[in-house]
Length: 592
Image (cartoon, rainbow, N blue to C red; front, side):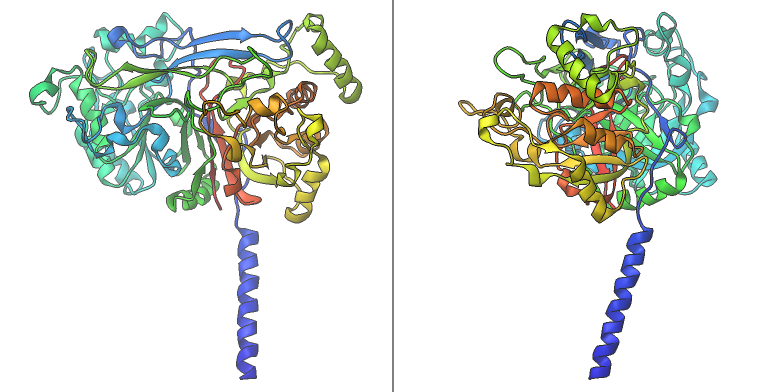
């Protein structure tokens, strides 16, 4: 009996050692500019990237309404964005009404707006279908069709399709024709007006074949997944009255099985099969199609490791929902100091309207709404800036900052200029929940300070922070206080802390950020509302410390506690809007 116990102890010990070895060998590693490809064009008012049909859609409008200088130490923009602009994701309700609606093309997946799509479905293994040979090979106003035979040829050349793939139709259309106006009219206006060939796209049969293989994620480097031309299948009854039925067929072949697709991609020539495709839409509540940023990780070994978790659906969403009923915009302290509130125009177009059977919205928001990026140019003054133009309060803060940390540097790094590789990488989750409740109410407004010692305590347990990792602070602040507004009750997430009615979220000092950045970290995130303290002077200095080093923040995360202290892979992407001093976007994490 003793021998058996001894042997059993040896077996358990061996299993423990093997387990430790497995843990030591497992894990993800950083990316860099050479292993990540940006797949989105820059959204620009000088391009025509919005849908021109029906006279209801509109170009993106970017208004720099708060500028560094007399307005204070930070800059922000008002964004007015039609969901169908440049890179965008279509979810089934874009063209599929709910099953109980009684409308044409209603189906089961008509409930799944983009906020309801599971996080794993935003990611997939790249499977390209080469359609370059048919680019422009069609009459004016008509699309050359990507056929089932072309998909089968891609399967023979590489491997059969299977669940977890991201099928990307590659013709080079957007790369060739997404240009500044007037040449940019060729992108959308020419095909719709019938003065030039339309883009290559699949018909219903092709979409149906691909999704029958279990594929849930697709993309195209054309402005739409909808092919133009005569319908392949006649639509009986009222449905036959709608415009562009071939385009409708192309979409429904994906939507019938709950697939989503990204439109308006670029740079697919730089992405080999087996790469990791990522398309992340802004998390608008109840939106059927959403402005998006897409990228691909082309380190095939890393992509394969990440895909193991994706296929097992070990992907979590770290983004708050954007709605007019939630505290997703900055209220400021006191009265009348809020930035532009979040607004939705719903719908811009609807299934039963005169301009085609589809649903689309428009969003009006400040550039720092919900889960978002603070690029260096949010607080960093632009090149050639006259520091004497700062108001007196900011000048006073600047004197203190430069006396302690050196001269404040200028930067032109708006969010469209932040490399997509910066905001993705192995996540280090620094637990700062022990700081909650450590301030004296008599000192409010006040935020607990995240110090260098807090970060070093994490490193003592989990090892030194490495270059290319993303550091995330986990305080549970947003998890605890993010909720719908309630009549007669204080808003506890943002307004109450700013007004000294409750404790602020934990925030790092400039010393803490410098310590982290010195280790080669390119992005820092927080589940606080802001990386800065609720105290204005402290907040400015924290932002200046990162801006001077060219490091962006990701703020207003939620659910960070789902990640282990070390071992997950963090990804944040925001629409690539020209000269944007913020960046509402989407954050996810792939678990180990």
